[in-house]
Length: 340
Image 1 (cartoon, one colour):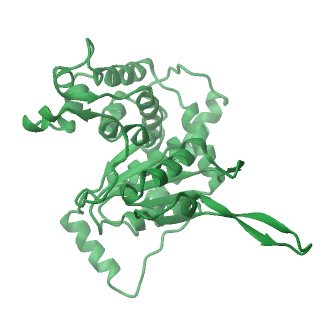
Image 2 (cartoon, one colour; image 1 turned 90 degrees about the vertical axis):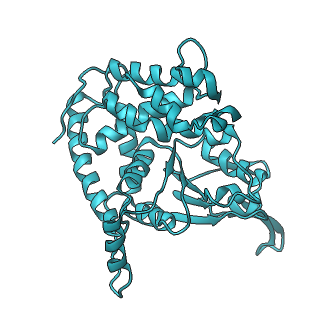
Image 3 (cartoon, one colour; image 1 turned 120 degrees about the vertical axis):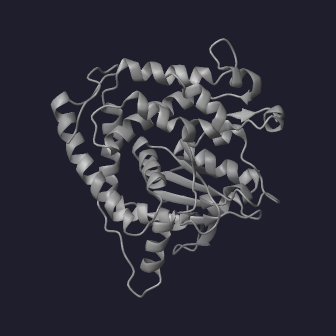
């Protein structure tokens, strides 16, 4: 049941309140079914699944940080299947070129015996793209992919080619092996709506996974949504009402992360790079999407607090002094959410 905890709305809506309420109820029921289907295949990663769904509903891209073997690739395939999206996977390596991702033009001879250029689309022309170990690709290739993420199109030989809609990228990084990698610059990290840390499953989840994946009976997640449903859901998220208290919480939180009069003591002491306006936009959209995922008609301040870490973590950097003093980004973000 949809329960509204914030009746006011600071934006304009393209739907009537009654139609929004009806759409929210129907979408919440289907999201519950989608989570159940994903749970048939992905064990012990409920929080990760929820945050990936929130990112898709917000129209953004996600960066997954996790060691090998925690089902990152399987997660992409399963979520794409449940959401009715086409998917592709790129294994990033230092010798991967932009054309390997975007595509290229080839010269061929036609039936008229004349030579023509034909564009061969790369794997980026899909709806849910996994860029595995993105920090192993060269900066040139990273830039080409992230430009496609931002603009929703690619330019080859002066010709613009639109990417499918919806278009989402899930990039992964291995937090252990950093030798021979190319860390993403801050401006490129900012293109991702969330950074999600993928941990090991707990004991019960790992037991269920063992029993389910070591037999000849393979579970399969059924499709719940279509690509059109996802686009409608993204529009619905932007139409959701949001209270003034939530808007103030978003602004207060982000501005506390910028060194200055509004910042916390930890921020003023240790923060080197602070979140920009895109962080505020991400918090607004993701808070709405989280409320919808939980079956609520409007977000609350608790949504902002819960999403602060995955949305701000990759948009901030600390001075070297922070490491010497044992201060982490989690500590800094916790100080920013206190008292919201």
